[in-house]
Length: 383
Image (cartoon, rainbow, N blue to C red; front, side, top):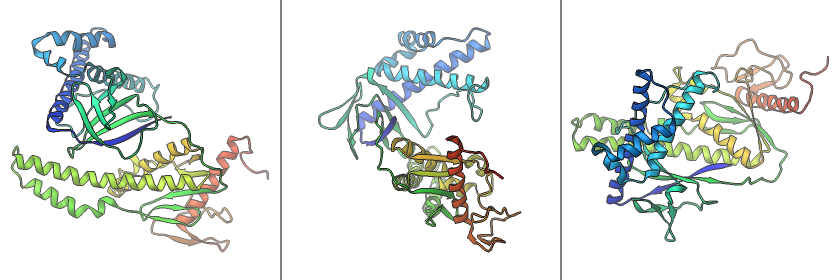
């Protein structure tokens, strides 16, 4: 399994200038390649192959006065920028022909120097390395200090240097990690994700919703108001933009850390985990969009998936249309309707249910049925 290990970088002023030049060169090659293919299509010419495109926008372009400065950076990052363009075209063609599942993929677009995120990628061909002193050595950039929060499990196959909107630099290493099976346990859990509580477990536990964005709204509002008062194009406005970005970065970091800790604990305690296959994109179109995005359900379930695969656990996703809230977990009676303001209800059989705990219990039961069917069990019980 391949995972990414991210670490904070602290480049010197000279290294920041070299990184800015590398970001600009990679962006230029990407845009030149995209423009070349668009012009060829407008003229009715055949699709330009990857090798021919590399020859035009990199090899031949370096010999011209307009693009001679491309030779001042590592050639690997230029090739990787072009590889990103080629992959974007392949994804677009696969989506247009129906070979790629999921939402429709748009054609590649031009990259702007005003994008909040800038990145370049070095592969092993670039001969990057971690020095004996713990610094990251990059070609034509130098040795950049790194804050190592943990050790790399293996030699990285590539490293991506990222500059985010808050002006922070990160190194994202792609490493190969082996499976680390955890001791077997008989515990299984169903998870009902919500907004009142972030998660309600089938064993009755309720995890409060941190609401990181809601808690930071006052600080974000002040930073945004300070930005609105600055004159456009001024240096003070640029500083205010960074302050707003840093406030949002703190919220995103806190949300990611919460999801990591909770997903690790759940995977460590349970042999099987069952969740609903929620349509986050659809819920984000409702009036609850802000709260849905603040919860970060998709990020949390993605962490559950890869951690379960690595540690020998089972993650099951059940249909989002499964009536988990309206179904009595005791007798199986299905209620006709249940508005969202109903948080507890009594079944005709006499069972009193907490809406969320009952939903989590039903989710766990549905996940067990899915696993039984996959192993050759009966689809429905005999009469």
